[in-house]
Length: 174
Image: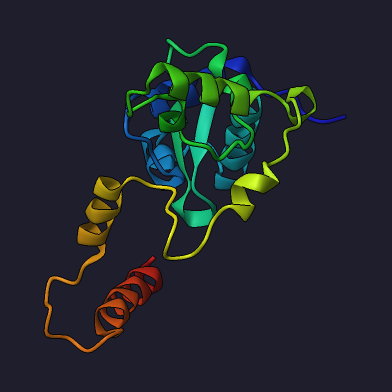
């Protein structure tokens, strides 16, 4: 029969994690608990607290950080699909229009509750490349300016290669 876990031990862990609003790694938790709990036991306790939705786990393996569940989101964690999802995913940072809110609500519905919709084949058939446009002229000009290279003298593809190289560097560091 497995050993019963003391609720006091779990509360002490939650309180320790609560001291760090930006999250805390397992090494810091161990040091805050004065190494009274073996590392493997602490890992099991943390996993249990995440399963009970009393803590949130961000990241994987050594980069894991633990956060306390925000008090103003008691039921919101049921919407989280993965236990590694950040508490920041629960908050909306971008103000949405009414249509945007309705769209977000429709997307959050389970797939079996959504109404299936097809596409209008005539809409696609009426398109002629370089003669008909789906976007207004102002929008197309704005997008063209946004995608333009800051250095007009470069050979075609050089700017894209420059962006690609920066992306590779960023990916290698992450």
